[in-house]
Image 1: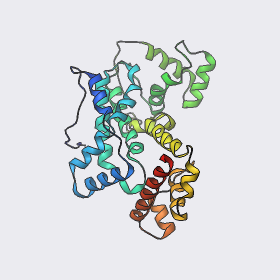
Image 2 (image 1 turned 90 degrees about the vertical axis):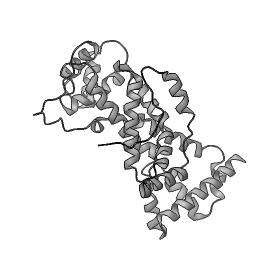
Image 3 (image 1 turned 30 degrees about the horizontal axis):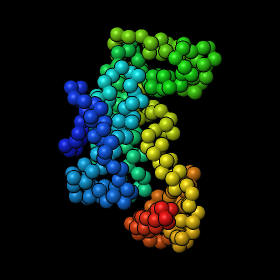
Image 4 (image 1 turned 45 degrees about the vertical axis):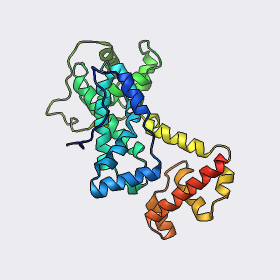
Length: 284
């Protein structure tokens, strides 16, 4: 699958990675209204300038995710480049009408590209020959309680959590500690080789997108929230509470459009106006 042709700042082995990271950190996150507007322009008219705005505003997320894979001995610049490809794929597929922020959608594509790159390049003998072993490969480092060799109880706990045999955990730990061996994913007759990296991602609550959203929600719950909500009309308050202040399954624009008998676009307008009003109240 081809990606969009967009001129972006890209890290390189010969350049300064620190300079690149400082550069992308200066790109501000988009508001939900800006994000939706750019996404619609790209979807409806193929506006590459709009797509570029969506991509560059999330480049720092790619950097954040790449840092989590530095323990595999691969160049961070290469990981970031692969993640940027995943980000562009996500922008190409993003549907602004689903009521989900791009960061939550894109993080899966970013991680998938990085996982594929690691599996292609990390030097391990017959690693990741099944779906369960791939999951073990990408999660064992973070699940180990420390840098020491796993004890028998640790092995049992990890094996149970990941759905593999204890001896597979021990073998994988040995491989992860070894060096200078060849990567051999499953062969052509491997029933599991059709699984993409997205099927064995790490826990969602550790993803940068989720962390960012949690931080946004925490800010909304800060001092002054009650007063800000009280200044809204009943419909606006219901929309904000359903979209931003629920612990599980936030309502989509279409859900609320059906509830109030209006269009999803109208719900988006009401939400945007209410958020601006709340920000003004909480900043006063």
